[in-house]
Structure formats: C-alpha cells, structure tokens
Amino acid sequence: MANQVEPELTKPLFDFLQKERFVLLATIDHETGGTNVSAISWLLAKNEKTILFAVDNRSRIVTNIEHNPKIVINVIANESTYSISGNARIRQRKMEDVPLKLAQIQMDVEEVRDVMFYGSKISVAPEYEKTYDLKAAKRLDTQVMEALKKA
Image (tube, rainbow, N blue to C red; front, top):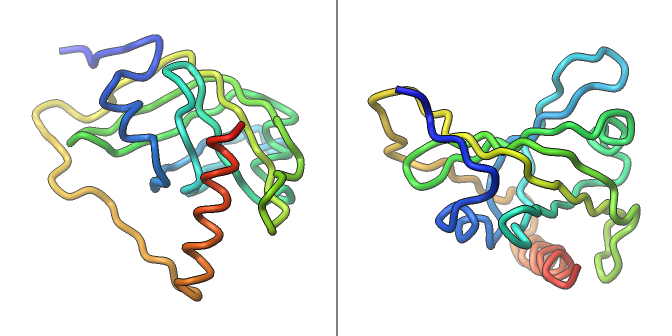
C-alpha cells in the first residue's frame, strides 16, 4: 500500500509543529553534493505551507541552503514518521530579539509524505534534554520561539 502524500501540512502535523520539537533536517552539501543531515529543534509551522526555523548563522545548513534550496525535514509525530520536502531561503541573517547569532530560515512546503514502514507505528516519541544551564536554556528557547512567532 502506498504511503499518503499531501501538498501541505495536515492539521495534526501543523498542530504538532507549534512548539519546539526534535526534527532532522536534510540539505544538499555545498562541497560534496551529498546529503547533509542535522538535528534541530527551533522550528514553527506558520501555516500549512510554511515552516520557519532558526540555526546558528555560521552553520553549514545556511551555506548549503544558499547553494541549493532543496531541503527535507523529518518529523516523528502522531505515531508515524513524516518527510516534509520543499525549498528554503534565508529570511534573516541575524534574528532580532535573540542574543545568539541565529539565522531565520523559511521553508516553503511542497510535499508531506508519511514514510513510516508498513504495519508499524512509533510507540515512543524521541525526547531530549538540555545539558546546559536549564534556566538559560528556557530563556533562550522562549526568545527564539517568540521571534519565530512574530515573523
């Protein structure tokens, strides 16, 4: 049975992407032409066709997107795994109201594909912990997510 393909985020996936989440981001490496995969957490679905995310502005992700805008975001949500593909562009090189030098990137969603293998579901969603000052981490997370919401 073929996996479901949608032209935009479904309502449950949109709702899931309304707060900081662990996702994998795949870009095309500007030097090798191969795939580059990174874990990120600061992202927000602005609407069903637009996802914003923030990364260090010196990140390889930024350079890769400048050379090739094609990206894929892999999300584990709602007992499944989704591949969200589209084109990205740098909206801001240095986000305002955020103390770190973070770039704000916009992804225009072209396709959402449920890529979970047949006859299975995710029984335990991935979790992560901040390993530095928890108070500082919470403050920074709030600043970044608020900046993405204002965009």
